Image 1 (cartoon, rainbow, N blue to C red):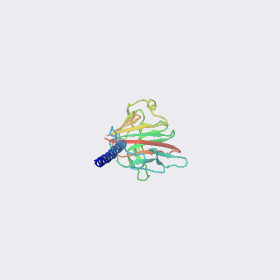
Image 2 (tube, one colour; image 1 turned 90 degrees about the vertical axis):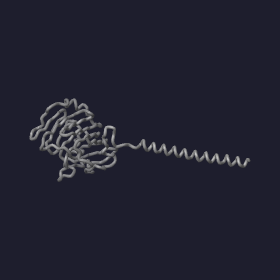
Image 3 (cartoon, one colour; image 1 turned 120 degrees about the horizontal axis):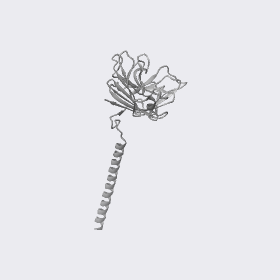
Image 4 (cartoon, rainbow, N blue to C red; image 1 turned 135 degrees about the horizontal axis):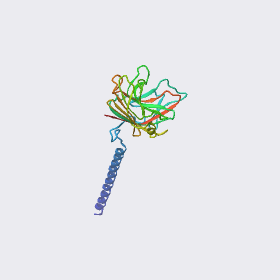
Length: 253
């Protein structure tokens, strides 16, 4: 009898140990899966914007890597007295040639810097990483930041504070104001991160900085207007400058 009881107790202890180990293993597995699920992020946010820069590589982008590099989750474009460029150069997003879209990015630019976000643009065949087309302008002195400037074509389309209409073979016609240029400038941070936001729908293009509308362009010029093209980030020909872009997002409309 004692011998039988001993084996019963031993069997019960072994069974309890096995169950405990199994339960612990299951709990760990569940926890690990939960952790993995918690750390997994979707590249599309609640507003429908998709991240188009992973913060680590040039995947989907192409440009002159003697000018552009990646550091701390940002694209950095820089020219120095010993590293010069002969023409404005662009880091080009290769995945699409958008038509109607929205674009957001955070940027920081040096005091003497000149940059911008090119869109609905085309590459030049004879100059590597050079483009022509609409540009949401950015500069460190914030003289031009927020305006619409057409690179290698019609030039100034809508200055900061202007709502402009373009007709074929005519200069821009100012049809309204979106605010005083200096008052709008006060919303732009100096030597700090700002957000640029572009909304391009049909022939209507709006440029925002930090959520504030800076300019609007309505392009009725049937000869020169464009409804689709590449997106690119600019480094301008200068003795010295630096610009950084991060958190780059895109939404197709």
